[in-house]
Image (cartoon, rainbow, N blue to C red):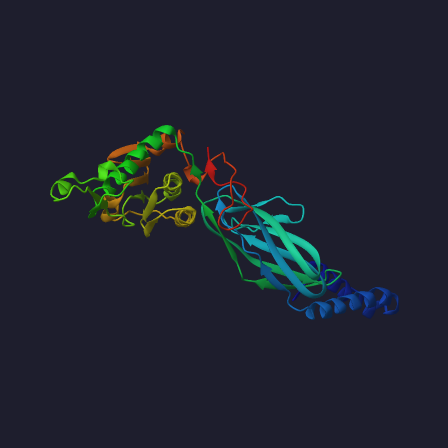
Length: 371
């Protein structure tokens, strides 16, 4: 608890009044000194008796760069008191203008939404942020300052609880030639599936003629046809995408890998991921796509192990020479995949396409897929 600037002004007036009363007599100054003293003492007592309000943050859903997210903080107080609420917003996020909360600069590349209000039971502090950069970003800590009715004395409560929001890299639509390039690796995995022999069995109606094993059929004493069954192990028919990126180029690598893996998964391909931080097992479907995007949201620069490079069907390289994609021994600039001169420098693009909700909620403004 501390006295405000206004409170110190009252103290100065009181001190000056006491000095003048000692020199000239108290009677003429009673009308000034007594009310100020009463107000100051009352402010000290009422502020000291304020119970600590409780604060609860609403979880923030993840999103793509450029998305907007509402931030809601519930505050509960035992009585009625004037309060100023400040919430720290970390780097990678920016506060969207809102009539309900002002914004100040904290001086550390962070900004603080500010709400001046009267706490009376339950109160909600709301503002909105824009997701500016890929990565995991923090909201908080929150500071709540209560004061007396005249603003002479204030008391600060700090809440260290923070919430986080994960920001995914942009996902671009692929250019027609890029789809053709990736189709070569998809086609090669399909052919590999048919080289993994499993067993022989008798022909059944509906079996493909190409699966008939004529050599085995010729050796049988009867005229029954024999077909070959191929291994359908989960590792078969997968495409592994790997990212090899120098420090400072993680954003570009993340965009390229997110774009390629999303395209492959939407095409029904089983996709695995190899990053400097480790591998993600092959998988398919929408849930697997979000798992990969979470990994790419926190991708940092680093070199792959040699085994990861050798096992990769699609290798993304990002360094001072740009972003390149290596497919079937052929190196293609990633710009050709999207039909753009430059993609994702600093992890941003200029256009988005509206779509469905992400895994964290339904308040997304776009899917992060740019056309």
